[in-house]
Length: 239
Image (cartoon, rainbow, N blue to C red; front, side, top):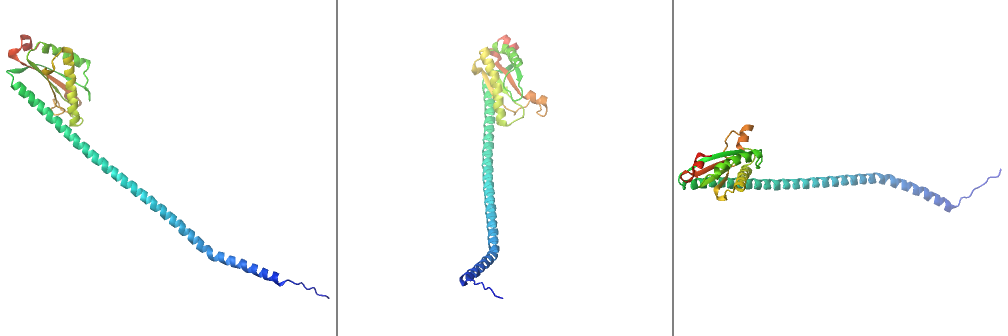
């Protein structure tokens, strides 16, 4: 029986061995480096998460600082506004007192000035406009004024207790001014005859804890003061 021999070149065998060895080395390296790569990726992810958390914390901190600064600024502005409002109220109050004192001084320096007529009109809440009924009432009162001589018209505006003192001083002045403007323009009463006083809510004529009382306090009182020695009979009778 004849044997058949296969001859494998040494170079081919060497290449095969190197190939096997190379595959084994790659697998080994891959197996050894895979955990390191995974761990590195994990660290990178944690680092990214930490960076995002730091950024978020910083943004929230900056937002908090900004909000706190805004609140501080708003508080400062409110304090300044309150201080100004208090100053305005004090100025208005002093002005009202000064007007009242001045009127008393004027009357005191004139002989025998006495009230010879009066009327009153009321206003709606936060209103300073005369109604048709108000005008009719003033028209009736004006008949007494036109017959008087050497007289002064004391026009005192008032409000209820709703709102700030400064606002109510202004509102009471506007109400009194509405009466003055109506009488002056319709009946040609000279401006120097009027003495306008806005007392705001300082002097109530009825309790402010009821609707009816507040309505009565939203008024303008008009008093006709005259020197009786220089008035005619019609003025003295108040007709």
